[in-house]
Length: 195
Image: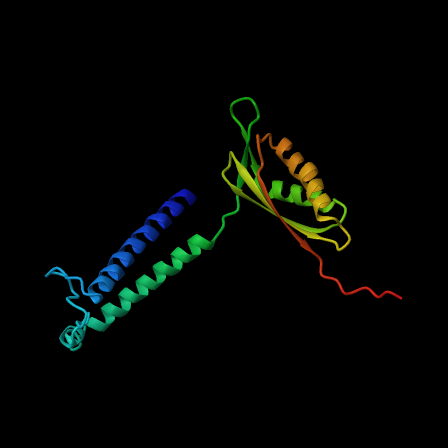
């Protein structure tokens, strides 16, 4: 489903981009004096896109405004659906574990996230950990957010989390690789008094 949404997103973005580029480029070219074909709606630099007769043609028809409002509402709903689909990052539901017998097993993604977070929380100086698995069942990736205590060295904490929590998760799930994006943030604390 995610690859379908990604493909639809790219195709729609490409089509919208090409249409806007063609329309904007043609209006700009005609505005600078290029000749327009006879069938084009914009004929010259002093021509308007919609004449007064075209703007008021359907004003007296009873069906015009409901159709316009319905079409704009449908466009708005499609644009909102598209925005939500693009911004929503799906959490990986399960990880496929190679058991060696050709069958494999499914490991719940939230269980693996919880184990990684618990082990990372045991690292000295890590106050809180949040883990989210993304990617595909057979090749997951981890997004780890670490909240670090003020006294901890970020490089040491990163090395410890990588060497312990992520390495153990990769070994336990029998994965060839577990790419991870780790975000480090320090706990905010007040200034210390020196006397």
